[in-house]
Image (tube, rainbow, N blue to C red; front, side, top):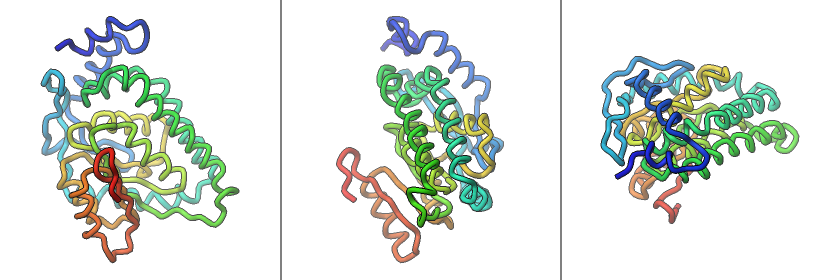
Length: 271
């Protein structure tokens, strides 16, 4: 099977071999990733391997999130939320716009990273996924700007726990994070354990644009980390994944008062 670099050498435009080298260097420099909590990365602990599904090559070591990690992330999000919600919509929009612009500037890098981590064709990452990620943040920057006039009676929920699958890693993050931030909520997100790398790159973008600490928190890990997030004291859970897991989340939260959004059953959502 040809490598990502081999494929990109045949392209007339878009990511190049140099972009692939840049991603490899980025991964090599970091080696292992901790969680992104309260605006900074924790020390990597209890790591597991993240592999390129096309070649089996080791890409990085990812930290397995514990209940304590989730608790710290939720605490940081809870602390940051009142000030974030009280911020003028125009100012939240400026942060979302800055995120969108930075993603746009790093499209080539993010496209290669997504393909290495997820295994989808580079053309799909380059032409569909990553451009749509930027557009979603631009779009919701507009909604943040208009929220005070268009939705004067609406208020932020608080802290949103978000759990996303492997098939559209960064795009699924954008679908969940961008509207939550635009509305004045803060976020604790758990990406799929197999495809966490673009979420961690997104955390670096949050640092780069100066997003206030605690507004976005990313805790990596497997299903036990997701279950800990469901048990945590958040105001909403948004989950995309299997129907079986979704049903268990619904049962766990029934009667708790926690808001819940479920998108289940792959391309045939059943809830």
